[in-house]
Length: 532
Image 1 (cartoon, helix red, strand yellow):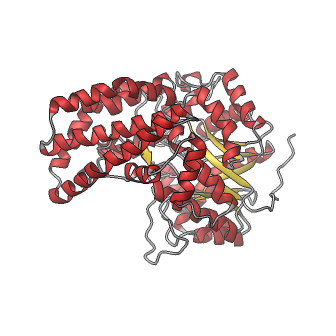
Image 2: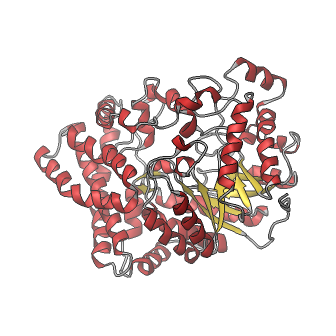
Image 3: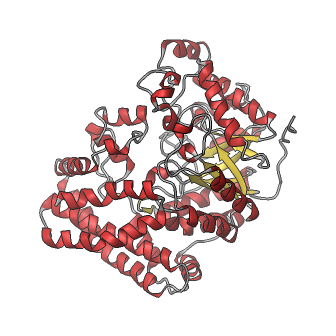
């Protein structure tokens, strides 16, 4: 019988300094990942949260494995490289929601709470819990020497949609219902000698329930909030489940600690389109690093979500910032620090690169109230899938972002529909003002990244990838401007996209394995070219 893990953890500040590797949708370039693992300790990182989804080599359910999934030998090599690099490996297995990678398969449809809900299992079906345990057993067979396991449990939006589940919830509460379901997997993890981690958003409804519902005390809460950039409470009590707003900012950490529960910090460093939200991501990470120190937290697992389709190569600055903030929470990662880091990373002057990343990473979402989410024109972002599903945003929540077969998705039709919806936006003057602001800023940003790529003495391929993505984002902006208001020359725009064909193909090959790169070509380049 494996030894039960101790609740006691290392007391040094920020003992866990980790980043999240989410493998759903696209498998990163496997050769690059092995090199990346070796570089992480140099960035100050000592842990990796590994979310397999469909990239694990399942034996009992082989149909779950994506064509680009790890083979058993590839996974052993990956894990050996991580451990030899001094990294703690923390596997993540979904135990309630976000199971669409499995439940969308007809073979497992009987485990859903209702037929149309592909994202979560029914907690009242014993066979559903047995299925999750099967996944846990297979994954843990590769992680015998690792101390932690993450059991997911976030965004359980659709619990109680069947009458039997709702009746049980009415007898207790949504929080109690969630805890009663998760306890079986927490107990299993403990029986295997693993310390369990779960997302904390179920407790946003009432933080003070944490010590009233029987959650095992060994459980670590992964407390997440992606919106905050200052270490202060909000007065309005606003909550946005998808952005990690939990009323008063970071209040939950203090409540968890007083109730005797450990927690780890959960900022986010990779949401955007092709480039992340630069300053926002840095500040969000810093706030949580400061809270680790003041709140007695175990450390940080900085999240990075595959739905945003950001290659690892684009994110290394923010990984290094995570390590720096975890060591020194009050460090000012200003322009000078960023330029110095970039110059060490690429062996070339990086003047203007931080400003370029800020310009290219700024979100631009055009509201579409009838669809329940905004349209992202620069370029495709997963929320644009509301333009694909007949039920729009509600369908997206029920089914997950993507269908199993990406060939079902007509990205070109979605893009055209987004352009047409943008033409209906009631504040066209405001829309044009944002467009003009970006048309003025992007060329300078592109030039800064081109200069870095031209002079890079180290990691030159990564520098070129940054430059190509910047060039492509500028081309996408010009195409959108042409389609929206008729400026620009269609023939010139086509030539610009054709010039980027091969460089973009090469960048995608550098970023992802074959299936992923084909998907993103269809989602990014083809809709723009065919719209002209």
